[in-house]
Length: 95
Image (cartoon, rainbow, N blue to C red):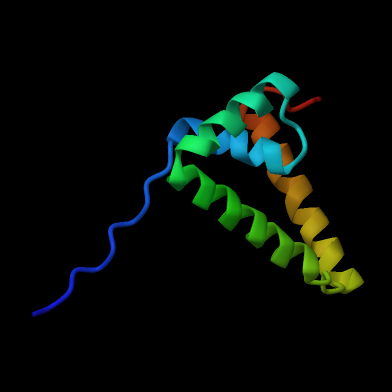
């Protein structure tokens, strides 16, 4: 008899931004209390919080790789070009 794969835990779409703001330290005190109360009742959001927290820990643990001056210059040029194109499309070419 084949076993069924576990059903993925659902999280509340309305809480995702709050969880991100909470992890970034940007959540207001009242909203933080509301989120804490929600987390006590919602296993999916608790899992999302812990997964996101762990991911941030892992990302912060990785040292950024140095980039060459050549790559930095090419990236800067490409970004400036994209910004100029966007300003032009928006009618802000002289800004």
